[in-house]
Image 1 (cartoon, rainbow, N blue to C red):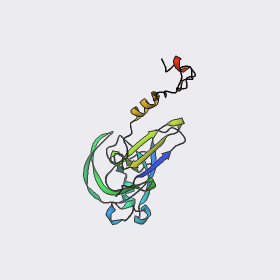
Image 2: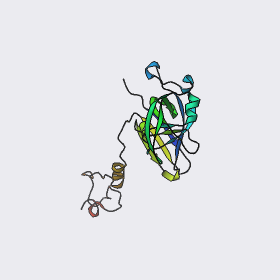
Image 3: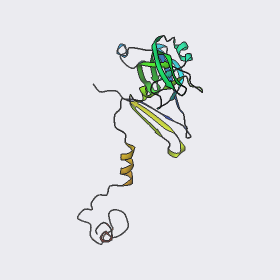
Image 4: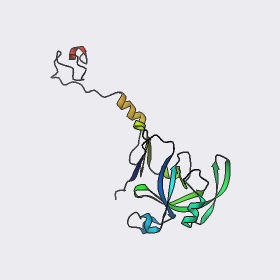
Length: 193
């Protein structure tokens, strides 16, 4: 059986320092009880604004999310943050990302978030797949897919762009013919040396 790749992309018309998306949160579901990925509306999931943070080990929800979704704590966990460490309740929830990307069962810590965000997406979700951020032409784009389908290596990609591969000329190129590399020089004065 082939694994279904789930993905989404968000583009901003400017360069941004905070990546956000809409997410839906609900009580944890059993994915095997659904023949296809469930729709958030079918299980009464609530919509919230999430920030994506590669510096956070785990995902976080606020008291507002807990109250609106009726989540019950499953235990306590020690969390580390900018002000040190603390003990906080942990909840079991389902996270519905854009474009039907679903994380059906996730342990999420209660926390306080600044700004408009009620959910923080941490590395526990980001590391489930591939996550990329680009800032081409002054526009930030971030994209996420799961499961991972390839190894992204920007260093290798940059090296292949910096040193274009030139093919050897065929034996039909004469010494006085234009060089097939496109330099405009005769073959004997360019690649034929």
